[in-house]
Amino acid sequence: MIDQYGRTIEYLRISVTDRCNLRCVYCMPEEGIEQLPHEQILTFDEIERVCRISTELGISKIKLTGGEPLVRKGLPDLLGKIKRISGIEQVTLTTNGILLKNQLDELMRQGLDAVNISIDTLDETCYHTVTRCGELNQALEGLQAALEYPNLRVKLNCVPMNQSEEEYIQMAEYAKEHHFDYFTTTLSVSPHKNAAKLNEIGLRLAQEYGIPYLVSDFKKKGGYLKSIELSAEYQLYRQDYCGCVYSKAAREREKQQKISQL
Image (cartoon, rainbow, N blue to C red; front, side, top):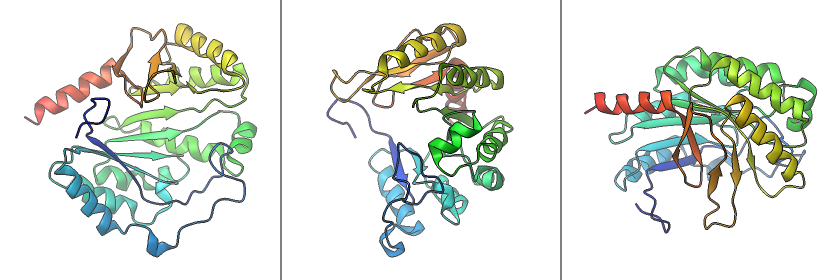
């Protein structure tokens, strides 16, 4: 499939639930949202069927998301079924990390290829304020568990809010210390009342820590993202709507894996 901007579509995101165990201020109201009745949500068999049909259209990569996908019972089994579909090369997961530690072993046995973990701050008070009910230590335990698997690609997502510059630097230090090999910390800045300050912080992270820094450029069609002063360790692999930045080591590993499958 080719979209209106000439991009090849090979990647499909599937929301397995509208439920979440957090109430992040930028995502939903404190009281939550009106949840869909269970009978209106795709069954695992239906999701598997969608994936099978999608492969006939050129889809080879599936990302399971939510809500928080790990709140749905039996998710590892679903992941395994999708991974075994002919034509599916990669199945990944987005999560806030809270439930990840207890489910990761089974997810890996079922073939999980990569995980995107959202943690916006390393300050416990700020984290609880942003998520309204989350415990930072649980998210970090999930992140640490993921880093223990050498073949699991780990991406750390950070949404800039009103954190202090010190908090961003703390996150950058954490990313540098733990050597995320796929995508350290991303600060994606859309029109924001503090955009100028966030841009300044982002440049500092790029220059001092080699953190990939992306800023939205809404003047271009499709809301493309442009990179700013990436360090030599990272490269802009695909400048599309997602603005994917990969470490060169991870990109080379992915290349070798594809070669070995030929």
